[in-house]
Length: 302
Image (cartoon, rainbow, N blue to C red; front, side):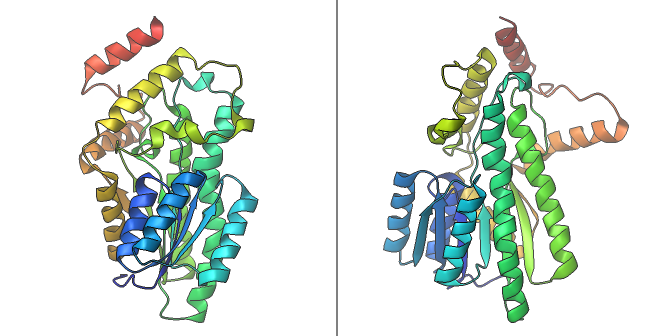
């Protein structure tokens, strides 16, 4: 159980918007030292200025989390400035949709690079530092939070590339939890599985690196439909990013592993797990809203 956050250090990726920014705001209110990383310089600068104005000591670095070398530099800078962090929020993520065979190699490299390898690098770079700190100080307590998604527990159609990345983050996080338990009682782990929450994720393409853009290729019909559906679902979300950030801090304090923004959506996870256990074919994801399925099939077959 972690109850005191004051003067503790937190590393946050994707800190310029969405959950990362809201977690940083809570961290600032709690008197934490903050290491903020984001790929979007203007958003990062604004976040850093806001947290400093709130009284936090801040180290801000522009980082592409998919790049091992940049994440290693972030780790070295954080260690030099504040020592080993107590909290790591591997939160940076991008969204992408479309029929799974229509995603280009560059689409896969971009989404898996950020959503999966970004978390891998965060775990790889910061966990050893945290373990060293725990060995040196019996009073040290740490916690790692990886942002996955309900798409890490479900497989909605027309967003396969995103589903694959988030399932991998859930698997990585569950394994991290078990691996940490083998070697220490001082460091915990959680996985955040939000449903549709208004953040900047549907506009992720604003930060797609040039070398991973599919130049000259227009988005396919399924990708345009996927974008429109996610825009609508995310923008109509009733739970705010700030509320989800509070859930994250509550989960850290309670040492709770699974963090859900929409507990009611767990019913769909139960259905999927029943499919697996009973070896029955995957249930129609639109069974509860058949009109959505009709609309999507019609659009894709047009």
